Length: 297
Image (cartoon, rainbow, N blue to C red; front, side, top):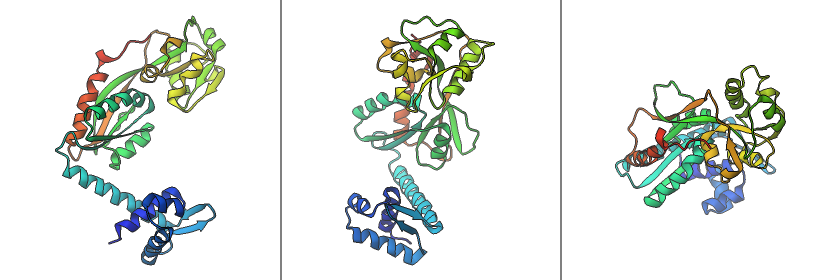
């Protein structure tokens, strides 16, 4: 069996790509870091190619890194199983898309303030990463906008989230020409979301891809900043709009038909959720029931 300290040193070195920083993080000497890698290479063969300011993994190095991840996941599972009955102690990990993540953020902080024994780890990620993280047991819970069909997962409806057409406050936007004059503030899912909503609101229009683009950002919390400044409009999920800090500077253009996405809660089906994960879910769900969702405006 490989020494767990050697494995921790190796995975940290790969993460940081620097012997000095690895030694500092692990409270070791640089010589000790080099020695741990040497011991592993004596057992497994060449793991690293050392280049100036860079470390490149050999095939054996990649295999060992995957093994380190498996060991870490196994250790986490053991810790979770040993403390699974305590609903107010331990770590709960959650991975979600950005819009719902913004809405969850302050509720998660409230839960931690009420239950200081809980440590909540929350990451924003697209659907594909959410699915992989839950399947690989790197996160207890996930939320996704697409319902996965995988027997290893338990999937239940968590919330619904409409797409919204958001424009600067005080502007009358009634026609396609109004949108063309404003221009579109794009984001990674912007074209897809705009295409889905605007094709229904403005049938017969040239399509969202024909609108002039006035800006782009990949940070969901920043998408509405240029809209608030009058630089354009955007289409994004409602929870992202509700999290915007300056609601008086934007407005939602209501209309029919709506485009409403379902957010699906995922976790592994083969074992029960820990008591602490159930505690977090019980506290979150009332905030995302249909009558708790703030109407647009």
